[in-house]
Image 1 (cartoon, rainbow over the protein chains, first blue to last red):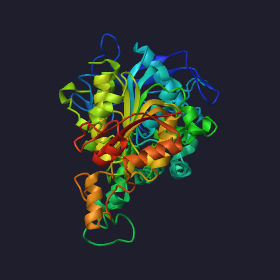
Image 2: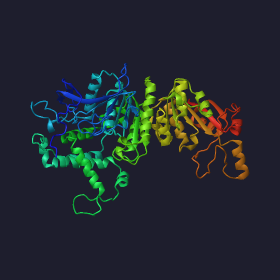
Image 3: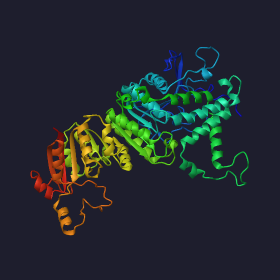
Image 4: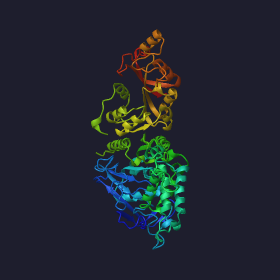
Length: 380
Length: 207
């Protein structure tokens, strides 16, 4: 197996801010690099920019093949020429999140305080808000004063919420998809299983696995397998696999038995090739810490008081990780704050992952919402 | 919003739109796929949005570029702040909500004006059917059997005047219309309107 640590020295397009960034945890990151990609053309007035925020294990290669992993763009159905987020009309930006492993500053980056070392598990705790502050640096660096829209699913949706709350004047339209305004106890519990699996892997070596030329692949794979179950619905698993056996020879006591097991193992093993375990720990923690209402004494509407953006909330009927009830609560709180909000639940049996998949109703909704906003923003 | 797909609005919606001053903030409750919202936005430069209970209609409205959220009039209006709108519109929906009186109260809490239209159960043809056949009337407007109609709170134009009186709402304007939504000539006589009007349309405000 390839022993090269994920997130190595591949030359991802990036910008470095040498003055660093102050984090919510009180620490200062002395240097911050943001790896990003852009698609389409920024208009003369710089008013047609859409920032796409990726989810937990996504990256900046939203609409093209990731050159490091060879995987197709994770949202090619949604972003591209003629797509709902039409790169013939809009200038699309996507950045690898702070704490990630695809070129942005993260646990795999050089240690900020100890020359020659890597951050590893000493990488500071980062929050969704921190990720967004770093994205804001990038947006300003690109010369954009106000984003036409910020769009993202799952953890990307959390970033959208953070954008609209932290920088209301910079976001004309906000689209959190299959998102939540806080991570529930159940969400945190599933993440914790993943983290414990990584810690339990003998190759974890207290997070210094790179130095020793190993990786906690088993642990990370189990983390991914657990998480993956939460991304799909029972209905979808049943439809795809049911109780099918992997091979006709019947059950063996150990090893592959049911088709669903083999599928999960594939999900796990393909993931470890592209993702860094410490980055997984960092980003899952950032999601767990997200609690927009909590920051405002439990009153979500208060969090939205300053919001100026037009909102579209989309949930999926079979998503049990970030269920419709979460989106509906957000829609009501946005109403309470007199925000212009559209909200729809899309019928789908594909679970949380539906936002990444072929869902024509969702795509038509997103396209129409953006077109309506473009008319209001005077974009032609 | 694509002007190419601009649709001519229903006649009854036109009557409602006539009540709305240009440039107002409007909430259309039970907006279906958003015809009236689109009309008010484009023809009257309003900041108009909607609530609709049917998910497919909501999806069509948003896909058409209109701000609509899925929700139920009975439960959703409470989530808006006081005086958030100039007009809240409830078109041919009052008779189908669970708590019409509370819905009206919420409408006039979140908005200066409420525009309400409903099918008039006092129309002569309904009275005649009930009198002669002794069965629940069936007409073009009341076309579902009593056990499956969504119209669980039918009322007459006279009933509605009475509720406005009890709850202290000022009837700023009103008219009766026929089934197609055309204005009928019974405008200044509630008694005649209650007999000949198929729909009542009211513009209310709080005292």
